[in-house]
Image (cartoon, rainbow, N blue to C red):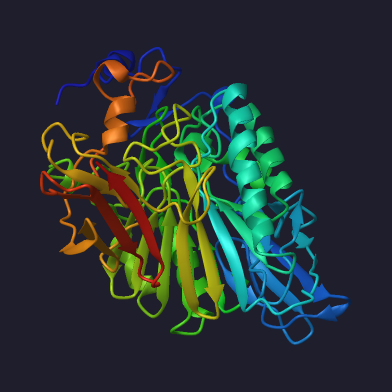
Length: 501
C-alpha cells in the first residue's frame, strides 16, 4: 500500500479541515484545546432513611436507576452509585400518600457531589384510609403547540377531570398519569401543563413522549434533559394498594430532530428486572409508556412491517418480564383508541388523546372523542372506561344513520371506541333482535367529514382519518322505522343508542 501524506489521507476520508491530526497507527485525535471531557467514572456512596412520622419504613425499594436496594428494619438504605447517575429515588410503598409539589409527583432527589458521598432522606405521610380501592386516570397527549391550545386544554380536559374526580366523592383516592407528549416541542408550555395538573387536585406521574424531548441533543441520553429537570427520572415505579405501577421511557432518540424509534434500553430492562423481582408473582402490574408496545395499525393500513416509531421493537423482552404478573400496558402516541389482549396475562390500552386530533376538533383520527382513560382498582382487579370530554361516562358509542358511509349507503354504522373482543354489540330493528352487529373495520364517518378531502382542518392540514377495528355496521330493511344498538362491555355495563328513520 502506498503511503499518503497525512493531510491528503485525511482529505480522502473527509476529515481534513475538521481539526484532526493523525497519530501513528492511523488513530485520529482532536487537538487538546477541543478535547471532550472524559465521563466521570467515579462512584458515590448513597445513603439515607425512608420514614413516616419519625418511624423508619422497612422494605422500601430505593434506586439510582441502575441498582435497586431495599431499606432495612429501621428504614435505612445504602447504595453504591456511579457519579453519572442523576437521581436517587424510591418506589412509594402502598398505604402512603404520593409526595407531590402542586400535583407533580416528587419521589426523587437529585444527586449532588459531596466527597464521594450523598445522603437523601425521604419522609412519607401515611394515608388516613386503606388504598386497596383506588382510581387513576391516563391523560395521553395533551400535546399543546400554542397558548391557544393551552387555553383549550385548561377549558376542557382540566374541568372535565375535576368534575370526574368530584363525582367519586371526597374519600376517593385518585392519581393521574400524563402518558407523554405533554407538550408539542414548545417547552414554555410545560408550565401550562403543570398548571393544569395542579388544578385537578390529584397527584400526577409523568411519562416522556417524543414531543417532550430536547431535539438538539446529540444522543438519546441528552434528549430528556429538560424533562428530567422538570419531572425527575424518566423511568421509575410506585405502589398503590395491591397494584405495582411502572413508568418507562420507550422513546429512543436517534440524534436527528424528530427522529426516534420505540425501544427500551438495556439499562431500563436491567432496572425493571430488579424492580419486578421485589413484586410478588401474580400481582397486578400497570406499565405506562408513550409509544405503544404493540398496535394493529400496520395491519389495518395493509403494511408489511410495523412502524419503527409506532411500536416498541424489543417488546418481547418486556412481555417476558411481565409473564409472572397480571399486566396492563398504558400508552398514547397514536391519536386513536385500541384495547388489545396481546397475551393471556397482558391487556394493552392505547389511549385516545386529550387533544383529539391535535386540537382540530372534538374527535381523534379514528372517531374516538377527545378524552382519557379512567381505571377503577379494587385489590388486584382493574375495571376501566373511556371518558369523553364534555360527556358523562355513559357516552361509549356513536351511531350513524343510513347513508353515512358512501360505500355502504344502506347501512347504519356504530363506532364503539373502547371495544375489545370481550364486548358484545347487538342490534334491534323495530324492537326485534337481529343478533350481533357485524364488525366492519374502516374509517369513521365523522372523521371523514372533518378530516378528509376538502374538509381538511385549516389548523393542521395534514390531519387525516385512520382506519379502526371498532366500527360495526348492519343493513336494516327498507321499511325499518327504528334501529337500536346495545353495547355491553366486558364488565356487564350496557350502553344504548337509537336511530329513527
